[in-house]
Length: 88
Image 1 (cartoon, rainbow, N blue to C red):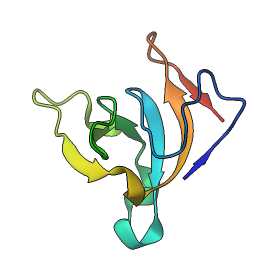
Image 2 (cartoon, one colour):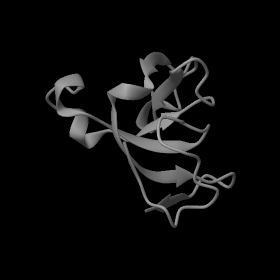
Image 3 (spheres, rainbow, N blue to C red):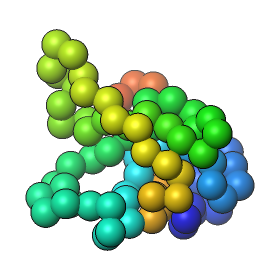
C-alpha cells in the first residue's frame, strides 16, 4: 500500500487510520467508483476496517462497509476534523 511518507503521523504499511482517504486496488473497484471519495470510519483492527463514501455522508444513515487492508492500493489523503481534505 502506498502512503506518502510526508503525511502527518503516517503509520507503517498495512495500517489504516480513521479519517484516511483511500483508493482501492483495481480488482476491488467497480465502474463509477472513481468518482467517489472513500474514507476510513475507524482505525484498522485485525487487518480490517470500516469505510464509507463521503458523498453519502448526508444520508440519515451513512452506509458503512468492511474491507481488508490488503484491498487498499493507496492512502491518498486525510479527512480533517473541520471537514476539509488534505491530499497527499
